[in-house]
Image (tube, rainbow, N blue to C red):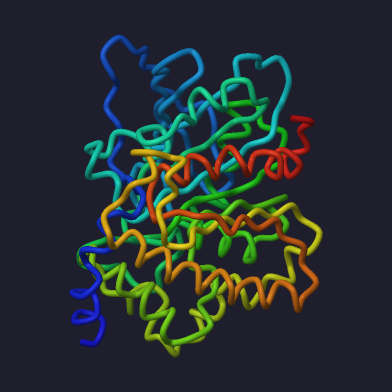
Length: 338
């Protein structure tokens, strides 16, 4: 099929995409306290079945998900001071980073300084561990390789009440992501605008309005062994338009939004952290095209977005920088002063 041959041509380029971790529950680390529990239950029957405190401010949580049909692990970063209820920021990974951690943690904690950076922020930070090649969406069919993917249901219906109950959330939620997770986050937001108060998207193809851009997205699924037709159907299927952030961006009007993308050239200021394989520039060039398309539709819809058209490639050094630069926007979304 077309996507198999197309995928072969881009397989090496997706090797530098950000980490996405598989769905097997994380094992307890040496010296951590394991606290299996059934303390929280969502209305649909999802429940927390285990919590391991890696540190006093970092937890690994296992959730029994009826939608996914298996246990799903998430990392949760907690603030040092936890005297009052607080908002929650969900951050999604890229295409396949679980390979680098044996699916034990999110790429965010493995590749960036997020643990230290968020330590003084008055928010829960939730980092799903899993979803390789899934785009964090509900697939229309079970995939022979990538399995059952009902990530939208898990992230929007099952997980939030559990996080709020177990970790004293106040019901205010924002979402963000990088690369695959950037498209996933923005798509979840336009489909669930009442759930999220703001979005941050780094190096994501936020415009899925053309066959060319849909092919690029489908090809990344194929490089991880999945059949993209099982996600949103053939490229002319209406589900592609239904999940396209650019098409539906008007529903986010008035919310704090942050979009960052590189120009495909390395930034010498980042030193080694700003270096990626040569295809990192090619990937970011495609994302830049997507971002211009998204911006054109957002502008037409009167949606105010904070953009960072920066130097950079498709790699973690830039996404770590993006997180720092996006924080003021995310803080507004989370109703925090800083």
